[in-house]
Image (tube, rainbow, N blue to C red; front, side):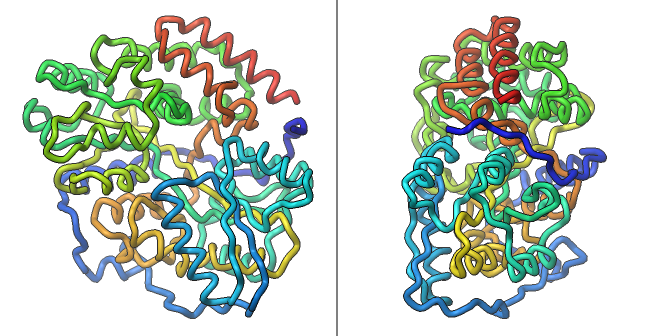
Length: 464
């Protein structure tokens, strides 16, 4: 794998997280008490009230009869099944023959082998800002064409366009977004324990203690997939240290040995290190993958193995595979405020063309339209940054309010910190931040040692 060259990015608008935090908190508090199901209100069709008018089928795509288009992504399970439906619709509209190429993390390493073999996919769905930068630095990525740019200008806030740009040139079309500052909870467990939704970290720990006392482990942690651990850290760090420090650490302008990192790890360790708080203990958590962490929290009529699970809006896809009903059995609240405000961290997957082909550009155009977003939105477990997607496409009020909060945030977004880092540090299984935080889950008292490991790995990755 080539060294991770850090290129200059188009400057992101980083004024404050106050507006997005307020929007996400307001939206999340609304859907903690809203039942599942659409309401059909006119508000969902009025752009001035958080919705958007449906653009229908006005999108024009070129005829690509018989042309082959390959698409690579790391999505598996339910996510892959829904994305294949999106690609099926593209096939119907264009006549192209689309093939899905499963990728592995880190996707940049996977793509490097494909490029070296002379068989890169036409389009890759890149889940990290750093991966887009590296694809450009390696001269794999092709700029977004004029038709796709029209969709971006029409349907996206500037902040989302900036995230897909390098040196002022557009390379990425963000198709899927994620609000990564949510805690999902089993309503029956909360009722049995007699607890309410906590708004602060101290209240969250008190709630966890009461749930534990009721006989249920309070928190399910997907330690086998370390990206979830980075999300735990980032939410705590953003709320506790503030947005300026968050940006500095994301760019490695301050070291991981900084006192602010010590504070965040100490806070996280207070949860991970509390006996009985993590379902299965550290050993069990490190063998628990993300879908399983959700399912063991919502097991229908069976005794759940946890009361809460932290992660983004994509959790609802795994909930759908249990007997639990989103909005009734499975509810959600904003990540509790560790500092003065609740954090608001977002992630996303961007489509990047790796071939100069008509099919690749047509697919970018389609993925930048409300037409493609509507297909996945209707299936659930998805939030689109496309502001012209009709809010009625979302299957329930929970998803609808998450989407409204994301759109209302506009340009004021804080992107997932590990996804901004070089992949060797923030996105590689068994290495860098992922490995360090898995080790921290095993031994949450070793804050200083974890900081040293993180800084050593970060220094190397940002230098390469």
